[in-house]
Image 1 (cartoon, rainbow, N blue to C red):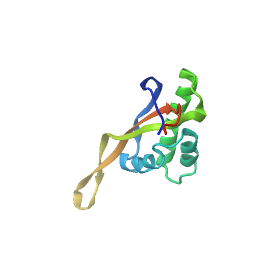
Image 2 (image 1 turned 180 degrees about the vertical axis):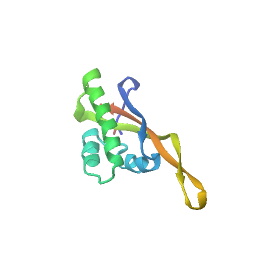
Image 3 (image 1 turned 135 degrees about the vertical axis):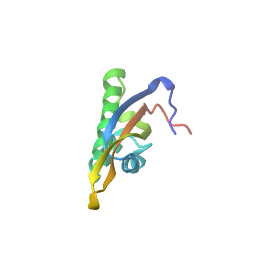
Image 4 (image 1 turned 90 degrees about the vertical axis):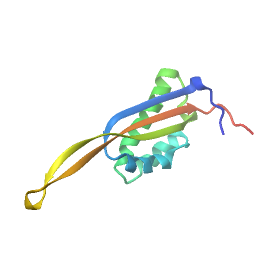
Length: 122
């Protein structure tokens, strides 16, 4: 594992992104702990639509680290990635026999933390 100081953590987040958190968590589990460049390539070629939303937040975290803190993009790795449920919109849909059914339009919050890999611990 890499040694990481707390001052070298860079965060990015997206709030109220359309789509269920469960679908996005499946994508996040594939890239958690990988190097940032490798994670971006993996997300780019995934067929799921949720991979595009996760890739945007990971790209933002990488850009924050490079531009705001002067870190090298090749040394970054995904320290943590969390996908949480956001409040869902509740909509009615008409059903047969004069009834209506509740339909939830789900949203999610995406939080990504990247860190710079300083050195290997033996």
